[in-house]
Image (cartoon, one colour):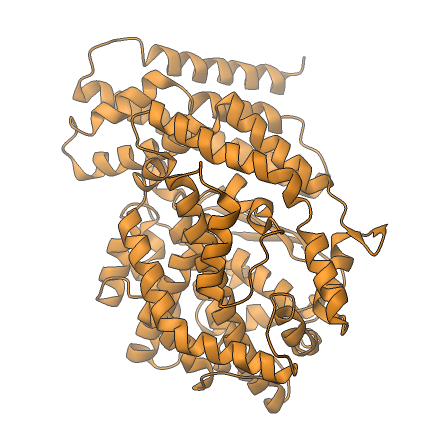
Length: 539
């Protein structure tokens, strides 16, 4: 056994010992809670660092000998019921604002792991992931890769073939639906054992928006998008000379234009364009603690990872980058996360974590929106003006369509946990019909193939809120500083109002203090309208 292994085992023993020893006394005092917070923060800081290093080795070298060890250790630390009990009781014992915030953040880690680490649930997740990963779609009598299925959906002029490809893509749903239904049920059961009505109420217990507020956003956005969305669907119908639009018609309608745009985003130029644009708003990538290990692979689908080794001192981005706007968007989001992490200015390690998925995604989305802006495209992407305007119009429509589908998927997830013993397939298609205005197909189990439900519960809520945060922030920047593109005030605002605080404060407070008002979904509609000033249509 080498010295490194001995050291790892010794530290692991210390962590396990501290976890066990810190939770033996029955009487819980404010001092006991403080000791538990300090100990847990120290352990997680070290474990997050070691896990990030191991993940970097796995991504860049193909293997990491200690990755599974540290994952198991992390799981052990966040599965200790006595520690969780101390954190729960600490809510009524601590008075200082900083300590309450630390407790709130650490407790939120436990709230997920206390359910997800249960063997029955983790085994079911693994089996569903295996089914999806190993599934080979069958198209016209042959097994073909999912990429070919997608190519058929996007580019095949034969409508019957597009329908066949769509059905082939989701055929595995008939093997996954029972497992998905069971996952919803047993997550509810485990949450109930921990004192919550269901899994949703447990998740929302750690969120800054409650379930009623999310339902309000769903209803408001449905109303706000109704007329524009209907006009877009009618335009697709006219453009393809159809009597009725089906879900497999929509990607085909936009694919040719988006493919034309891809030619202006070659893989080996994406970092150059982005670096130039970010420098002009104040972010010089070569002067920040960022390290890139990128491999350029033509036509590669986005496969990038942002690893925060030690925020704010060491951020790394690795993966394969291919041609096209989708790849460029994935790159800018990873860089946006790293820029956020590298500007945090907090002493407490816990406040340097990017532990709120909604806020982290919001910061990434801000940069994505900036690089999609008309002024950015004019300045940095050398495409013809006519093509740029057609792209902006199509991009806006595509976002409206994706927003309505996001509302479908989020509404379904909320309903699935509220009452998972219903016919979930009927629930899905009822919601689908309501939000998309497209024909239903009850013989396809689309919802059962959505791995976000398995791997990242309520993540679609994060996507919805992130778009709204980004749009409201950009509206504020434009109103107060003019163009956000090529303007150093953009960086000054983001660092001063958002980045430097890390997770010290709730993100709702940061949005309210930064923009001067509570989160408002109408800004997202205004952002989409700003792109073209039009209401529907592309051709």
